[in-house]
Image (cartoon, rainbow, N blue to C red; front, top):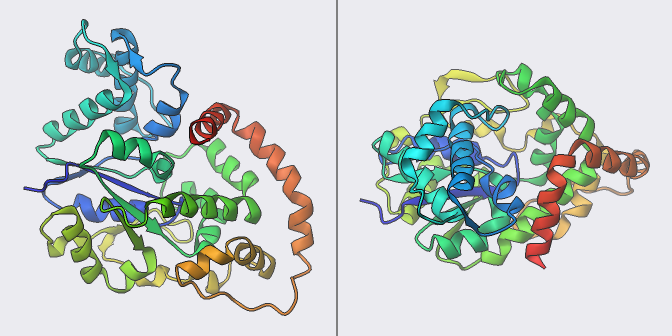
Length: 334
């Protein structure tokens, strides 16, 4: 039996976190959860650390609702409220970590599994809290070429029409309107700078998306060794769904190496590639990504520089609900 009871898959969005979650979910001991966004949307908005019974019921029931229905539809049913109440003691005080633990263990028990795998990418901003409160947890940090991440984010609005019907049309519109190469690349850079703080940490493993796709069996064995799990060939039989550049395919189960360097096939203009490389140059070099050479900056760079303030303002208004979480995160990290 694995000594690891919790796995957190983190990284910049669109870097293969979902794919890695599916791979691990094929292991008989592992249950992979949906993207819960518990730390960024619930824990980050906390007003206090200790919760009474009613507050605990609210937090726990919303976790169950997100797992059951996804982050875009977390309506709490009466059944989920009753389930949460049955797990809690009215005389106890709870904190966010004990409630999260209670939730994970409940789902594991229901599914006869022993290892919880959580795949919310932005949990990398909460690794200090996670590793402090769950010292036995293991973290897999997924890294992908910033230009492929940029292409995927640019096309992300299409996901609703490529198989992800549960995504609200307003969310697709938000993705379309808010895309900007400067913003996206800064988020990619910020994500990698955050997780670079944990280099050398025995509980954190860096996995390059491209390396995994080129040598899936070898890399999967290394990951299993890190997690103290036995490797099984069937772990690599995963559906190719979740891409923002091609339609979902559930019938073919394999690791698709053609997703490497998709940006070279088109979809990004020269200005987007230039800006991505310029902003993330040092990080790209650190992780061995070769940069395309430019004699001069493309003229369209000027358009993105001029449009950036407008997109930044749009981002602010489209993300008003998330602003408090960001402010709280910044306070906690300073």
